[in-house]
Length: 288
Image (cartoon, rainbow, N blue to C red; front, side, top):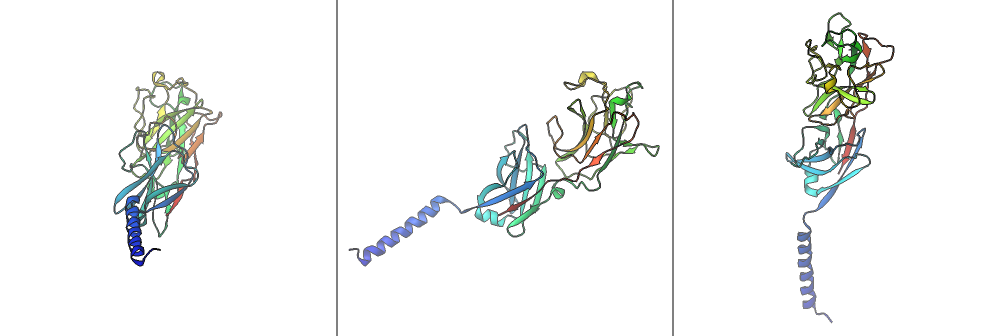
């Protein structure tokens, strides 16, 4: 039979054993659940990554490319409880610096155990977005290929004005124009200000200066992408304005497309064509 002294010794031993196990197991952990809407799967090694902000420091989740379904991430419980903000970034292929990129697509502040994630606070608002463009090739002196260029210009007043109404973007993003030619997306260049020239014109002629607005003449066949021959009749093509991650190398429009338009077979060079605006934006929430 165990004496009281032996029982006391056993109790102390078990207590010491419990403390040891707790220490070996490390700090307590807790889960964070992320749910998003209107995000699409990323390609070419690009990934999403979540971050909680704790005392100004960013603590990462694992990276993921497919945003569908609920995502559950484990953090040190104390850090998760003290987190004040959650951000979701887009990280380029090869990223391994464990620092949030500038390209933030959703963000929100914690209110007790949850945070509503805003696209507008992270990227921009699509409210008031509108666009017009016309076919023309102002960079050369040949009037037989006017259907081989697209310019985002409104010339309805008789003077050239910006044809795009777009809200400013946060750091980490740029706008980009596209024309889908024979199912091949061809860039007209990236830009941040629709009232200034874009940063891309390898397809245009050099005979005349390009207008100081986003757009492109598709004339330089030596630079044309595979599957497309310049000059090209753009009637029947789709025109897109996308929002692109900074330093994005994908040769197709990102899934954020605030404006799209179609060039009908009956449209003529110089006709002012209207683009359709999208109001679909990513949303999300996190629960801890």
